[in-house]
Length: 147
Image (spheres, rainbow, N blue to C red):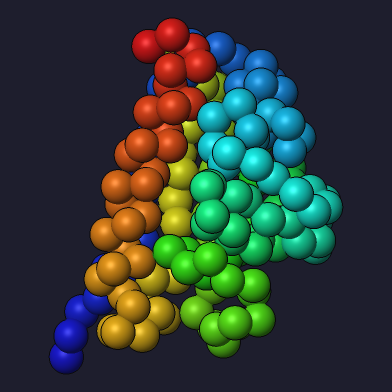
């Protein structure tokens, strides 16, 4: 039986309280644009879809959780510039950001789950792209705090 990795997990400490981190990096589409996609279009509200854009890469997403200032989650087809209905719903991954108070400010945890449901033909490519992608994107977020 082939065991496929199901999640990517990253944690970092940001030198500000959770409300400040939330407002600066997650509260609105404009906040996300300070560190994550190059552009964001659509409706950034629970149950609605929006597009995160990097160059010609346009990823349709659905916001499924918005619990200010503690957590935000969305679903998408990682690694592919496709609409949500392009692959089966069961192949969506869920990205969750959780903010918790920490002695040095805020502990941010990012977990992307659901990779085990992606077919073998796409699994390794998508997982590899997102492993590197999250390292890069979260480094961008750290840079907005000067560390």
